[in-house]
Image 1 (cartoon, each protein chain N blue to C red):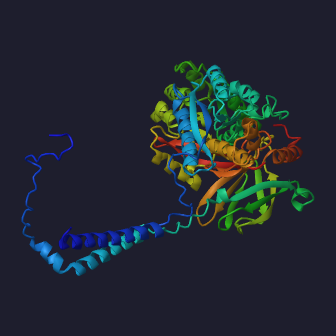
Image 2: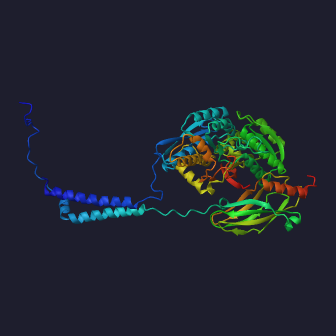
Image 3: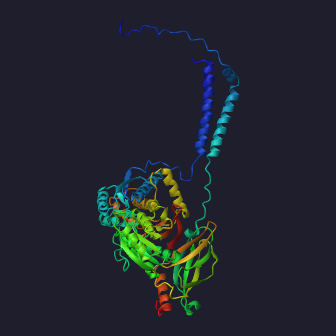
Length: 198
Length: 419
């Protein structure tokens, strides 16, 4: 046998007769009979399934974010001493602060106080008052010494304590008005209680 | 030749496949995601150039709870930037080094980070004393450093900050508020709200602890409060019985401790055990869940001030908390997690600015440019608006008083510095 001749048939290389067709199952027969209906139903089901998935996973509009807490929505800064005001003339220390609502719904100041013993405080406008979003309001604050014995000497970073309310929350927050306020307050205390021996 | 049955089956298959394919295409076409343009690329990074954000923090030892929270939060920021491709063509990586809370180790780490040219910014450290040891190394290399936790005022305002503020290093920034505000804030709360008038002041003699105790004491006295006694402790010991006895005998109605929780916890416990049932108050260094564990049940009523507003008041912080949890970090983000994320994000924003100004590539003098860009960085971060003043201090200066109640810290009062 030459090397190029056809390979002699072995046991597994002989052509065999095709096996007789297997008897078709009842399901297959029914399928062939209703092929169009089955195909149409499958397509409808696939589209419905896709539609269902789409509906379930459709992009949801982001839930409206909750408004900020009032203390995170406002600024309260010291502006200047209110010289020449009736309160100052009567021995009080008057000054203005600027309250700005940066974002969110209107903010109501329900309480405005100072934390020190020996001092009392009034404000104009008096609390409660509301400030709208993206607007600012000047508040005139007047402090009066009621007891020099108890009043602070020269606080370094004095506070104003404010209770704030918006549609999100009511919260108490301190505003530390900085060095200028501290100096002006200390000076006013010195004037009011300078001759007092403490 | 295939028989007729096979053709029918093939046609059926084609029809079904077509229907399913149509459905799938419809899904793809209509199911567009949010408005982010589908930029989600996992952690695959933003592209070819790698920028390393260094981290220096105590990753082992007593303070590792805080340090690991810092490291993980920076990692989360880098992953987020890569996923969102915040800086085109840049992939951020994090290289974290352990300073063990030791200034000398921190300085060695600073040298290592400077030696790696890929490092364009560093987040850390935790301790002010460590920060002090690193500042010059970074500044010489014009490598920007953003600390999420250093609160000693001298780091940004110079050693004579009470008389004249002079910024010592242009490359140093921080997202945390300084003790120039934290100490007085605590004093005001203790004196005015808690109505405590006689304090015993203790510190650990370290830059942070001694500095904080000093600013507290100064304000407490200005308000009219009385200092019943002062003591320094050795942070290497946990036996504070002698100091606890002195506190008891002083008649103080409150203790202020300048230092960190590994000592503050046992100190609180031993002060109460000595018979002085008075609150121990500290700064952000004791605001850790570990303090409560160490102080035990008698620590109920102890107080701490910490930087920032309570997490529940900041929607951005809530998102950070959720993402941190989803990322699966083993350790808690602790007190400085949000500030660490914001510190890392400040570096990312500065890198972005530098790349955008240089036609989408990093310039040769990238470190100097990133340091320069940091001064004008401004974004809405986890902790609120993040930007820096002329000293490199955070412009957002919020603080909160927390109290131990039912085995956990709960917020009591917050304040904002608006001076």
